[in-house]
Length: 394
Image (cartoon, one colour):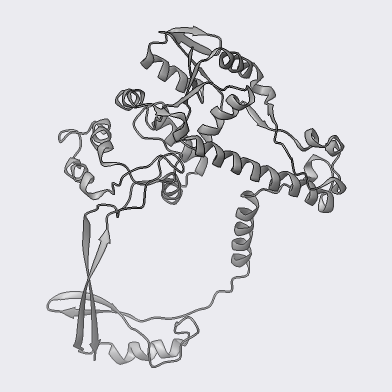
């Protein structure tokens, strides 16, 4: 039996429709000689510390650190029924096609189930980064051998175990040393969350310790050739603070009195050409930052919206990636998905220019599933920006 192993039910239903599986069963869809099943995210998780040392059912620094010689996984209670279905299907399968999300975590979700159930048959990989019909058909026509993405599983498990070692051991140690006791007294520590929290605290302390300091500048508008030209005075011959700012109000006011109503002379004009590379496409991080700055959206809300555009509406590619480039061959399908036309969008001419403005580079199956190779510089069209610097004197 050929078994397609997906990450979530909606993903399974989408793929089943493209491979002729129509008969719905409990936790799976069958038909056309194949079966499609799914997880609900991770169906298993790392075993708890007390699994390795029963004495740690009650935390004690004397039993730390916990360093497993052999790592064990446990079935999650809330998804145990679906796990049993997947486990039974794995026993019957002669080939497993991993059809989870095309990233490191998706690889782990599938392979940890195969590993726990002792599956040793053929493994293939459906590398799917978008759910529109054309993308699904293309991915099904070019299924990868399983060994192509196996390193992503090792990478993901390494991250998972590092999180466990740091999080479990340090949480138990800090709680016993400094905690107040009870569930509310647990001092959580994580490989990622604790350094990030430290950065937030450091920033908050810097804000609290900030002492405002007044500084002054002189701005003037000159009439040159019939045009108003705004300029700023660059202080040089007066005392400045360590950050190059003028803190003496009297010096600024003296300059204002000196130039007010006077005729100046342009002594130097410098013109420089600057080259600005076209902006890259959004990665998840850059999208979250801009949505937060523009609309005040929280990171999870942005991710939820991006996930819906990818999974439900099938208008974008896989969102959970740090990559912000796409392969040139992906572009025609992306523009078709926008469904724009000159009549429906006054900015159509701008959209038509995007293929030459946005960065496109060769892609490799590595990293977060959509990362790019760095062997060649992205092909972009550059914008030119002219900067003029003028010096005037009275």
